[in-house]
Image 1 (cartoon, rainbow, N blue to C red):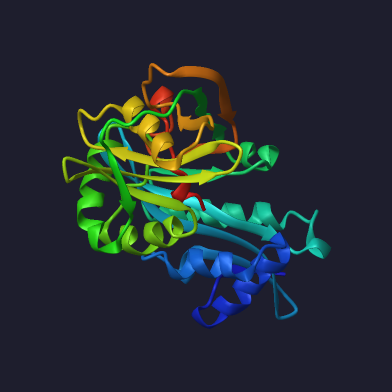
Image 2: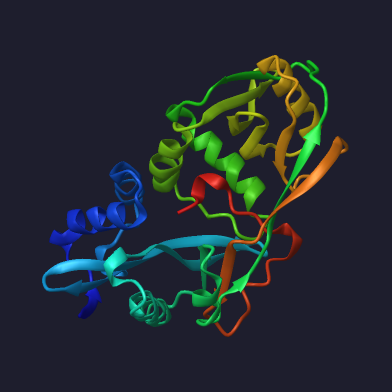
Length: 289
């Protein structure tokens, strides 16, 4: 078996490998590759056996906010091995290549989301929890207006996003290219609304609406009351559902319970520690990989 970087003419083969190994639609992997402005086949590591690709680890080139600064982060994704090749240490060998690549290219921290704890812990990754809270409230009209999220608003939306997210630890430091491609494509897969007050754009929300309203991303301008926005959203939707909200938001609404996600893991790659994210830890759902 040969462990190496992916060749540019093998991208389609690699996408098909991911589809088969994960049993997910090919479109999911195509979308996350094509819409990534930082995509680089040389940061995808594969195992080849008898001319076939049988295993993969991808390093996604990102920057994240950490204590008000931008930190170079390597996201680990598309970690997979075909069923017949599992149990031979292929993922470990590929992850070792990925970590060497990140170290050589001056990444400061690596982040991944997975349930394969033992594998990643053996390489020094540590769990960092993400929390949401389930809120119970009532619908009220405070005068906020909700409208479609348009790509023509990208510049304004990005300013709002940066002003809010840079005070947290973990959000992607989005570029205009990333916002216009990755974010807008992911937002189109969910319910997404711009938020206005007195005809001024003051934020946006992306959510799923099932048994509860699950807030995937909520960005508001300084001084905007999050409780009023959420109650007004219920009014706009004519809904009495409960709301799942990232825990970094302060709220006076009734908290029914906390929902904890332990699947995100960090590995520090620098002399400075960029992995101690604390209670202000947040990774927006639309940036998941």
